[in-house]
Image (cartoon, rainbow, N blue to C red; front, side, top):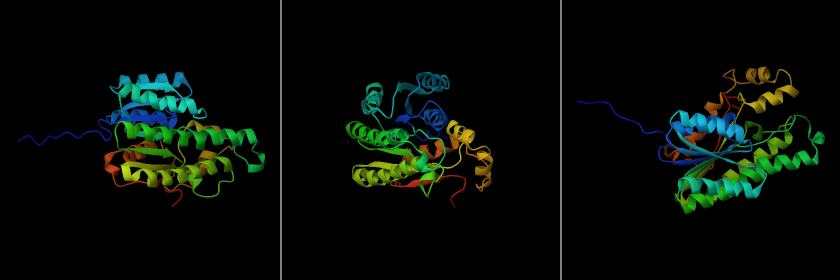
Amino acid sequence: MDNTFTTQGLLADKVAFITGAGRGIGAAAARLFAREGARVLLAARTEEELKAVTEEVRAAGGVADHVVCDLADATSVRAAVDRVVDLYGRLDVAFNNGATITPPGPMDQVSEAVFDHVYAVNLRGPWLAMVAEVAAIRATAGTGAIVNNSSVGSLMGNPELPVYGAMKRAVNSLTESAAITYGPEGIRVNAIAPGNTATEMIRTWETHSPGLRERLAAHTPLRRAADPDEIAQAAAWLLSDRASYVTGAVLRVDGGARA
């Protein structure tokens, strides 16, 4: 008797759209989602990075393409979501991961220009993407799921990154509102709130705050930073049918830092 069995990938037969996919958590998500069976469209501002990740996914046997997208540009965001439907004929799931960061410091040292840029990329960008994604899911797959990348820095006061934290907290609110609005038609919307993760964003922050990574690790029960793939794993599960009764959640993926 043959006792072998095959397990389908977590995102088998899904079409996935990922922003901020050129590096860090977004690139890890592109690799993971493709391994789990999704056809993926990678979006970000830097074409060289997108090409490299796309070629890596294809070399590993995945189905991927890329589109240059600036989250601060509404036309660019809508065109990127349209592109996934043009390429693959549908949209099932989306991971709104792209974001920008400011140098750490108190809010009175943040210029209006910086505030406006963080707002445009980190709040208006995900809002524009969600609106376009809901329309695309509704018009093609009919049902689906969206995950927004927030931050544990959104869950309490964030004096070192006050504007970043405020925009991410607003993303949590949009996530919860969207979950209520689109749940009746079978579109789930959740967020993840990563803690200390080994990304370029953290490395940039550390240049302004020497010893940052050691301090963050010391305040994390698991005593280390997350690998970007560990954050992507949480997003993949929330986007998958295995999380079919989860919507409106902001899931901490922080090694216990906010326990």
